[in-house]
Image (cartoon, rainbow, N blue to C red; front, side, top):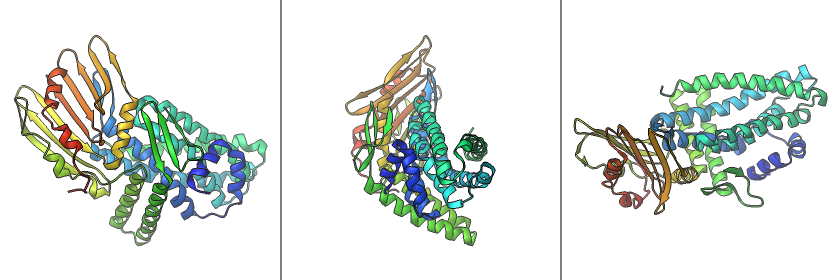
Length: 409
């Protein structure tokens, strides 16, 4: 059974599916490379887009994690999720005799891997903070999957399943807190439905539909399988550099499953940074490329000032993943306003636009997600929104939309 069919059957017919899983021959490598490593990419990649491209904000306060830090967090969270599932399997196996079950490391791993399906698919909701509650509901359904799977795979008496599930859940929460603390060391201070009978996963939202084709998943799985072999070899040789390289390859394959292609060359983005922005001179620039991590990302930013006013222009490309940003921003259309600030997201000419500002003119931000997924953002101090939008008009957005994706600098 392929990944798509297995996920659908687990979500819609868990009890029957667990019986089929119990009888299947499996090994650690197969469970990881053909299933878990693909699904685990969803919360990692979507979380990066939500934190670093879309950002979190309301009424004058906008927070976005810097792209490089976001990339590091994406890789770290991806690896930790793979480790977390393995640790959960160890917990399930160790507790089995306590609740009248039978110890079996491979059956416990099957349970941990497949029960995580709902939570991992729910990771798509990290694209927007306002959808976080839906991700929590998806995670709760994974608890139900554990409950239905324990008596089948670990063969514990049905009457002890509730207590078994509760203890596993508490252990998983503690493990999650520990891994969250580890992950934080690397950081600075609609509905998801599986299309019935279709050769793809479809995420249907008010802003559109994102499709993930089976062929792409299989290709990503093969790349991840090769990265897993390299990680295993690096682990045996205790070579940190080789381990980092293999992890980067796995993350790149994870990005590929959501349509990630080559990013536009970073030097091309740099060329779009004007020397002058309004009456402010360019004081410096920063060009970054995700190639070092094996990720399809490039960014160019610049700082402008005239001594009284300050502005920052940032241009980011996520390769094919930019289309996910287009979808996510489209989902957030609307406006808010109070006596001090205002915020609005809308679509115009095939682009998604977002503005937020303080009414006293102390701060303003204008952001455009272009047709090809490039994100252009300007934020400024001591400037009103009309002036910031005027600054955006000096950036050649049409030229950015026409840039070819031929690789990275």
